[in-house]
Length: 414
Image 1 (cartoon, rainbow, N blue to C red):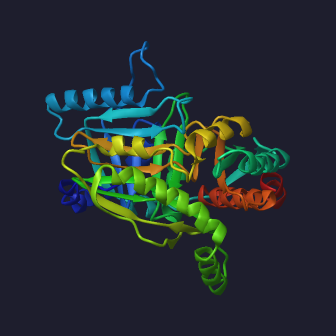
Image 2 (image 1 turned 180 degrees about the horizontal axis):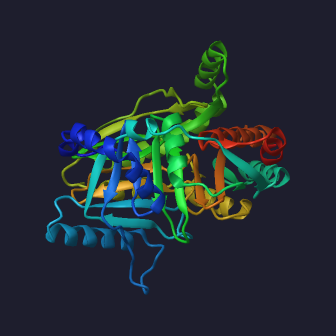
């Protein structure tokens, strides 16, 4: 995830050494004693015991500045104790209802992602049962309620999500999911982060919230999507249609405008393309705009400070923020927790990278929960938004290597 250059210089040596220890790496993944974060063909793995970041019990746990101050304190202490470039890694939730799951590590190493994809072939995991956390009736009704809000309030966009619970026939390992996600999504931000209660957050996000290398920053917001097909001719037409979709371009513009406005306050020469492009995952097309710039010397914010300034973007919440968040709290019948939050790392020099926590699941033994959302705007249709979340959930089931019979698939998604 935008790792320091000094690590890249040692990448080949680490790769060769680790080739001999893939079983140990997979065992460490399953032990939940390390955080694994992938970016651009490399995987950051923490070394040594993870130390949870905690705040004083009398502090306001919903106050982001309290967490930023504590993280700065921990990184400075580790650096003063001799750690050359300590990091804080982990996940931060959608809102203050879920406490950040952050850890400090004195050291880390960079491993080639090829190690995991070249490990022993994976077997599909058999699914025993799928249950809806949000029924179709509830979800489409919430979309209709959002459409009413557009008529009577200043709300312009809201992202409504849903989730499904899955029980597998056997207990599964985090390494199985991590390998599967990395193999199928080599260009995504693939992550494995231990959570409380022996759970693990796993996912393959296509969306970069913020990356900082020195004074250079990059953000790559996504909004507006279409499901790919197996026909290349149809896919070309789909991508062209997405680029010319007034509904998707309208939805995308909210995100780009919000990210550009936030980053412009901290940057010189911020570059925001006038029109989006289309990026492809193995199963979806997304409208994408890569925004880049340089931090001014007086705005030497860390990657995590920048991430907090941006989060949550209209891509996963809506606009205006307060109204969208209130609508989500009112219309969704569950707490998102880490879903649609941010996952990544920051070092003692402020460098780091944070991805939006989408295309993800929460895993524990033989149980997991998967999430998907859709951006609702004035021209949205309830049935189409349900189908979009179904498509995203279906592709995630495949990405996680889950094997479903047709009746379970229909019951779980339609």
